[in-house]
Image 1 (cartoon, rainbow, N blue to C red):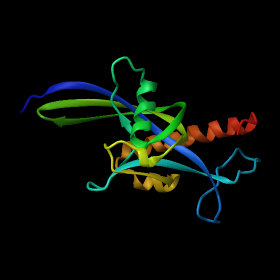
Image 2 (image 1 turned 120 degrees about the vertical axis):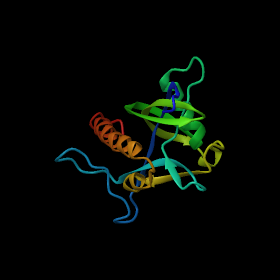
Image 3 (image 1 turned 90 degrees about the vertical axis):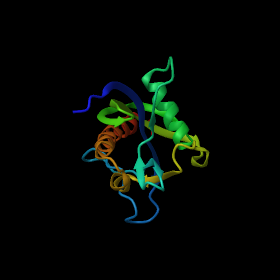
Length: 173
């Protein structure tokens, strides 16, 4: 049996969303509010990063630089990988997985946050991925390559719905 040296690694990233007006009936599902409230006329889109050669779609994420908080890592990485300026909303959840590379077993934990896109340009994303696109939430769930990221996206949807409801109740959105 081969023995591997083990390294614990941490990274952070997130789910970047935007609200888009519903313009064509049936194209998007409206954002749902609490029972008795009217849905607004917008739908949620999520930014995914991809590698066309490998056919991979993922959530943006990356590794910390010295002195960064986990929130700073997540914000920097999603901005670099998507080209978008983002605003941190809240923590969503974490995933863990292991892999072996060069005779080293890595145990990796990725902490994910919810971000709202507030500017920027997807054309300005870094070179790590060659694709960055917006997808309606249900389509983003179908496109993601890794099951653990699909789970994070569902968690982010729940968090986002509660946040939007709070924003509406407080008259902030």
